[in-house]
Figure (cartoon, rainbow, N blue to C red):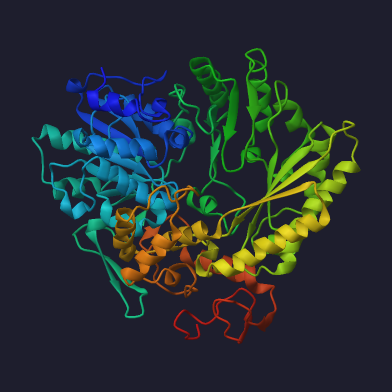
Length: 621
């Protein structure tokens, strides 16, 4: 039975199904018999959160413990948020409808930097203090994990515990320590955190002090508690076969963005693209056995009723048993009307066989990541794809009845010139020409879609040292790309990301703890759902930075010295600093020196194109 306030709120919002719960696959337990209750919070809408495979993995894993109960909570959309504030209805979980304050721990996944204000909004709706220092034993532990944990410093002060690496072992370890402490009659919060800190890959922000130089750079990051390591090493699962994929998804009531069965076939990547943070964070590459995957996929589709199965990973076509797995899946999938999709295909191992084995029921769209428009720039970023491979891949697709292809690119990459931007349009035009030179169904025109994101240098990658392009530079490149595409063909469609949101992403990606007050103040001024165009308040953000005396350009548009202490220097993700420096230098080694043309500096000095320029304070680095 719904609380009268909740019932009233649901009657006044557009999509009440986002907030009702009761979906097939939901786990219900007797809360009075539970030793540990964990609220898994996704800091975005229900539709986005229910597409996240990580939540499904941990939801099933925690709930496999008889005396633990993991429940879900999502960021309510604007109308529901307003109703909850009007009615003083605390943020609750989907299963029990209990407020977050009723839980032992509340966990947030850090998937995207622009969700940070949503985390504060959810804490606010739950009436939980923002800062960890303001929460004693009477409050739930606030926990975080996910890819953005690799530099969680901008929001570190809000969290008690942050998980670096893979959570399948860490999160049960945290819950076990909570259970032990409760059975002892409760222990002081600091003692509980000391115990949790012994779990591999666990970072307790309160146990570290950060000092800064007068120019704003980080001077040192040091532990302030005995027995706490100077560097936290990420947790890793050595054998993925020890953790079978989940087979009982919660099936959403309101359509998720990716509403399908999904099986993680491998983790990590062997490619070494210098721009790709995920490729470095999830090393080394590990894969699940084909027999295990086939059984899990069949059980998942039978339990959920899904008729589409996605084989998920950073690079699915790199699985050594992929052909064998597809053969096994096709023994039962067509009979059950289940289609197969491989969302992470590489152009250099795409084949006629893969198309035949993934289109027995229905075709899914084809998307390939070329990343850069010229071979020179693809070599710089270590994206080992050639035009011959692009041509071969698209020829196979067109010969098999496809008439549309989406190509992913980035702009703002290190050493990039306008010739590289023109190369994006030229590549798309060559694909259009290829279609008309390949036998295809008569009367069907081709559509080549360019999807171009703004490159954001990320921590733990070789490009963490480079400054991000300015907003003016990115807008100029976007305009040039559109003009080049229009001049070539009406068969080319161009989509690109907003440079303003990319700028804020860059600030948070390489930021430090001094950003926490900015994020909190921006939230108080109405900033949340920053990743949504209709909600993003760029001017409010910039005014907040100015009012608090924080320069955002310092973080993302300043070259980082190769020997500089970074906000994430105390976080070890298995790739050494020396390796990142070598890869960065290799990327630039083939470039020639020429006068600096950076709009953000314009120092006029000769240096490697795209390499270190004058730093933000106009001192040569």
